[in-house]
Image (cartoon, rainbow, N blue to C red):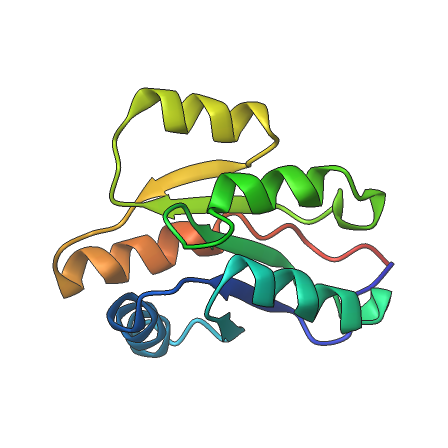
Length: 137
């Protein structure tokens, strides 16, 4: 399956963090679209509406979201074969090893810590890009 327009789908309820990551991707001229939704529920709804050829190249989940946290969304996605080829990473302010291990056990490709300054957001944007797998023809 080839994705026609590769992009990253991010779920994060924090408007400041959304802005930081958008600005970081713009600053590094990442060349990939970043679509942002405000919650795990919004992410799941968005995915349901997307044709298989339009699924994201990467899913990024904030760990601490209301209603469904990132781990819960990850667990739901893990039960759907349709999303198995998409790398999924968690972003969090938490260094709590139990959270990290749990997310990796659920199938997260990575778990990254949210930075506290723009230079580190820029570095995080570069790191996020390394999780994107080349599209299959």
